[in-house]
Length: 116
Image (cartoon, rainbow, N blue to C red):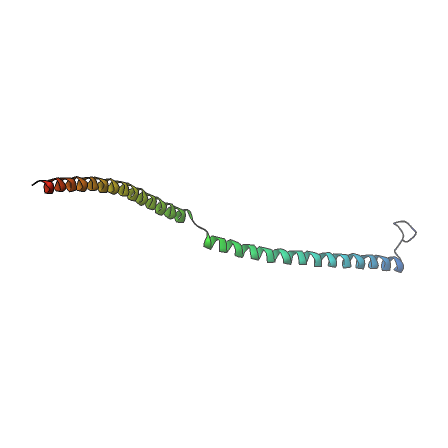
């Protein structure tokens, strides 16, 4: 087979050559499989980390209901702030009116006391 055609029987040397080549191929495949194992191991570690991150995100993530409650609380606070603002304005107006009435009463009293 080393020098002849396909119809000649293989010699021991031919068989040894094929075995050597197969051994080399087997060693290359083992090296490749080892490399693939390392890559797969790294991917598995990263997947586990990603799953842990996702679990953490799910546990700490605000849901639509949570956001709805926060927005409702903000709206309620804003409503109270508007009501307080309106009351403070009206209270200011009431105090101004009372001050004017007190001054007027003070003038009246002064004028009544000045009369003999």
